[in-house]
Length: 437
Ligand SMILES: *Cc1c(COP(=O)(O)O)cnc(C)c1O
Image 1 (cartoon, rainbow, N blue to C red):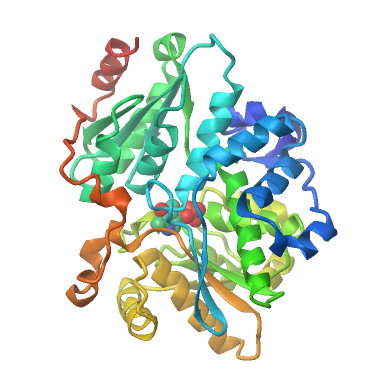
Image 2 (cartoon, rainbow, N blue to C red):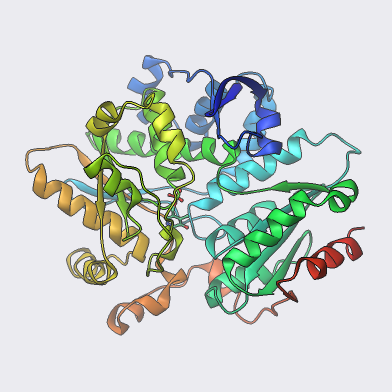
């Protein structure tokens, strides 16, 4: 697999280089030079294959021989060890549940795959990899649990004290082993600034092999394509040949992976981007003007993004052709009030409890169906997190019905372990240097 930078199409790097660098120096994003199409024969018969086999086909088409096939198979079997079921709600409406991994959010796919790819590329005897990650909630849990026990790696997670939910804090602080949490007296932006400063610090870089695990890493994008193909396989078994995917979107990595799958030959009729009032992309599709703005806090806080970092990848996939993009992509935005009101009918009609992010995607499906009443394709909305991660959002009548999965019930009662620091860089640097053996 060769990759270029969206800012320099003459650049060529290997997958390994792209994984460890995360981002090219020119601040573009890495994209595959060539996007392979899967064999038609495979796609036509995809319903006969298991999730892991589908994942393997997609990964090997993309990566080529950068990871030998047998090793890639082992890696995928370890990383993708939980299901992504498509659950039927009514004749044409389905929910793709992406929350069955250890942190109960779709980010587990990206984090588990990336951690194992990094460990694979680290040669025996090489210096340990120090992963630094700032989180506003969901990313930290997925990265912590994704790297837990992965040899030759250590993860330091910075989170804003008092600003993540109780479940999220438990996921960050109860792991031990190669995972440690640092609680910062500040905001998410302060945490992010500390990580950035650490990457720029010469002394730290001389002593530690620092890397980032953020969502623009190409190794997080690749595994997210797997479940789009696998969802299609499940729908084919139910007699559908055309699919519309509605994706709750923040940084647009998830939907970008869906579009990558489409470019690899997945028969998708349309993508629907569902956002909260951080609506940079819906506004762009309406007005033609791409104008980022500061993020606004909402109930669907993992989508509180005013400048979606993966958007350039989507433009790149469509060669910057907005008209072509618009034939494939619709976008809808919803306010907090609409989100709250949306969670109730899903529960009343189907007995289904959707997290706020997921509810926004369901609302987007409703809006799409109203505008396209004759579209007979399967409408699939992605559920990006388990509802129990956001209990405070639900009206009591729904909250009482939440069933805690094992991943959560086993966390309660565990002691939280973290280092509390203030937001000044010298203190953080000292902590890293004093705890680096
Ligand atoms: C991260 C996240 C999103 C947004 O995904 P993007 O790939 O950034 O668009 C949506 N829902 C949940 C629950 C998330 O954790």
